[in-house]
Structures are given as structure tokens and as C-alpha cells.
Image (cartoon, rainbow, N blue to C red; front, side, top):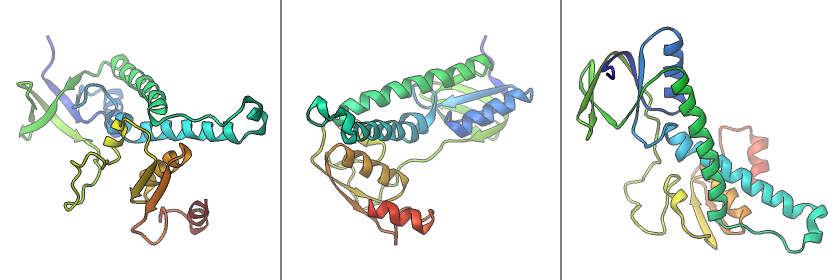
Length: 222
């Protein structure tokens, strides 16, 4: 029979939630994790960090191949579509999910699927699951989501955020990226490497303002 009370319940299965759950388990606490996605890993694995890094790595390899004089005898430069490099990202995500699922299984940390809602300070219910769980303590590690300015209609079929861009079903000839943070610069580089004409609109004074000026200036030059 599955247990319904734990010392600690972690809401969120991304890197922060996973680290909290594993550390608590190693200290002898009974722990459970709530995951609102079909698979563990959180937005980092399925929507944010892992997909964008996998896409960027694939495009970098394509560019290195096309710029390497050793391979010019093969003929014209190789071009891949956005869908083709997405397939590579899917494989990376699969490997990440398998690895993280093994962590939970080896440490005997149960995963409950669903979206958590607090009933009281020691009880949550899983929305649509009709199940309640209780704990002495809760750790909320639900991550973040893309910012949607209130005057922008994200229902438009040609408008994407950093999550929904992974649903793009064609390779665009022109892309305008609004926002020059880490993810904005990554996707500008990805589409530029695939041959799209890219415009990067930066509301700040410089690219990636948290970097040293020399690095930001070098990125702007490139």
C-alpha cells in the first residue's frame, strides 16, 4: 500500500527539486516528489536548458563541419532543418529523463504525477487525481515560465515564447527575437546557424549585461 504521509514533500522535479529530494533522503527523511509533467526533469529538462543547449550544440557541429576545409570535397555545405535538430534534442531529453528517473528509483523516492494544491499547512491534494498527501514540511521548487507582456497576444500562430518554440513545425526564413538574455541569444544563434535571417531586439544597454563588457562586446561583434 502506497504511503500518504512523508517527512518532506518536494513540489517540482527539476534540478532544485531533485537536489532537495536526494539530500533529504540521504539524511534519513521519508520523501516524495510531485511532478506536474508526464516525466521527471521539470522545465529545465523538457522546455528550457536541456533542449536549447542540445539545439545549440547541434548547430555548432553543423557550422564547424561546413567551415572545415577538410570536408569541402564532399560538395555543398550541409543544411539541416529545425525539425531535424529537434529530433536530436528529443534524444538528449530521453537520456536525461532516464538518468533522473533512475536516481529516484535507486533512492526509493516515489513520484506522484499531478498539480499540487494546498488544503492546509500539512496537506496537499493532487488536482484532478482526487488524492491527498500530507507532510511535516514542504519544499516548493516549481521553477519559472516565460514572461508574457500583457499587451502581446501569444495566441498568434507566428508568435512563440521559449517554451512553445519547440513546437515549431517549419524552418523559418526570418526570425525576430525580442529579448537578448541567455535564451534569446541562444535561439538567435541557433536560427542564424541554420541559415535564417535573424533580428535580435535588445531592450537593455548591451547584450547579456551580467557579463564582463569585453565578452558582451565580442558577442555583439559576432
